Image (cartoon, rainbow, N blue to C red; front, top):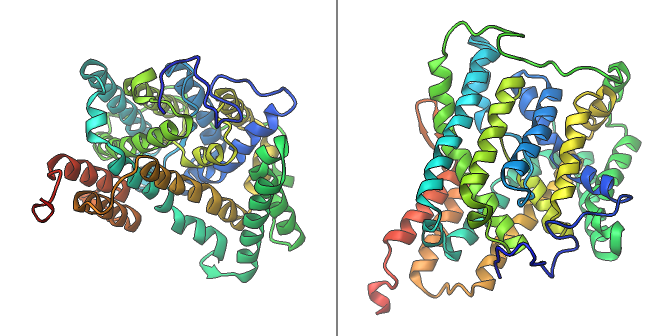
Length: 428
């Protein structure tokens, strides 16, 4: 069931969209979201050469902006996008952050332009372009396309296979599953957080956690903000940055659409219609523009947080707001930020096995709930193409522009759905 009625309550939810958690449990539920996305959020700036605290701050404020623009109706978390790492690294070596900033702002403007067009045209076309046979496999791809990253975190110490790391990852995975299955009430709701804590404790006991950076980091410090015409003066318009960043916005848009599809399924809503696709795109774009103005990387919606909601059935926007507030504040608290950065890869990998797997399973549920018939060749062809292209990450690369496997799979799925007949000639 999908509904746009604000008074509707999803019977499957522990906490639904507009329900506020008890004050005692609210911080822990929000911290669970923060920990689930923290590794990916700070990894992007570390790879690019930016201050991780800025990425943390901009993700928190960007999420709040997205929630405001979408009228507080979508529990989506916004944070650093991996899609822009390659052009960002290149620009940092030539133009510096001034070029990255213009590219990031250009991404936000592309989102706002598309959002304006959708606002005038409407989103009724989505139902025709994205039926269950397309949406289900795309959601599966969103979960499974990052399975390799989760496995690498679980197995590799640098570039070397480490049995100790793998053992920590499996331990983290198992305790998280056990907590989710055998605990009740509040403790079951924070099973992911408990899994991270247990995996971290084992990592400390086995001596793979380095606390030296925590000791050397001050308690409070300002993030290294990059304000145009205050921190730096752009020498020109960096067209190379704009032209390398702007097209990639369509890649992250495709991923954003996929995330909204998953949230629709989990919450039994239709966010494409209410608050509307134009608002979700505008929120995403505004978050990137803000990031570009303060020194952060481009921002997009995060699957890790959707995975948390799929596990604990807590869809409360208030919990996401809490996570955003913590992220923004932790950008100023050096020791806490440094401590969270010490969470080792195998703990993140073990948790990711659960989070990404649950997202993929949500795609299977879409197919089952809508009774998609795979005896029909049309359905078989569409699903097969989406799954193999998306999971295999068969990306399209033209010059410096790269369209991810998820994006290619989404486009191929939509095209096949629109052009293939209802029945193959052999089925008539």
